[in-house]
Length: 348
Image (cartoon, rainbow, N blue to C red):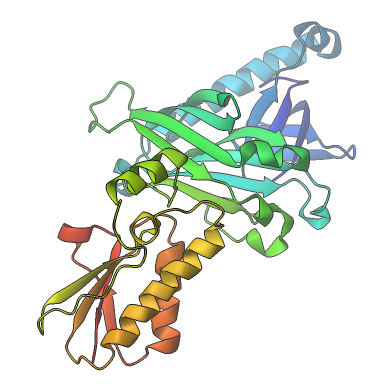
């Protein structure tokens, strides 16, 4: 970091131009309104280096010497900081965060995107968005352990460009042994409507400001959404030719477990023209149908397979249970058989 660099703040929104240095680890950053803000150097990231000729013209030799000494000490401290690892950090937890530059003017503000690496590993990543002609790389870089990295700034005119995001990355450590991790490729559907609603930006563990957080991987497990592509729909339709549109409820012997798959491709032969809200309502209709059919069968166990995804369907099912079926008992179904993607209901 040097005088004239344009920087962004890591722990809050905003940034500016480095005007000088104060003490051993403080940078003076001039914001858009002309105020000099003292900020820890380690809490800034350079997004636009200064022109070398401009730096030579505006910086005094003594200041340059002092600056190099300060940077050397900061880098030395930062190397010590980077070696600190946590037990939880041995599992990969990776997130994307979106913050408004000016939350008080949500209708006109630009937005910032950050990548959060909550692990002890370096991540080499490629952040991409989908276009009509394929995927477009928006930022390819390396993020260090237990840090957050500024990815890009965009305005509301570009929201449609980031509706479909993919983050690919692989993890490693430098100069020390580490557990081998899988390479990850996670697609995320960004709900751009949320960027127009103030309550969508919430308190979080990574920023002082409110943000929209999208999990990419948690505890080494990649996040997967309920994404129904045209190819998947076509394959599902071919596999289910002749199958009735609505699955009948098959009554089993008492004390046997009913398994009801609520995935859209199991309930519907064709989802063309249906919004995500329409699909969710159809899934809940199936859920209510099964519950009402079995509400008098005391002791009956029913496993509803909703998938992991982003938790929308699971949360909707739990809300239905708490609101309309308070007399039943429910719990997560067997992890060995269903992973995180199913809830078992017991009729009392």
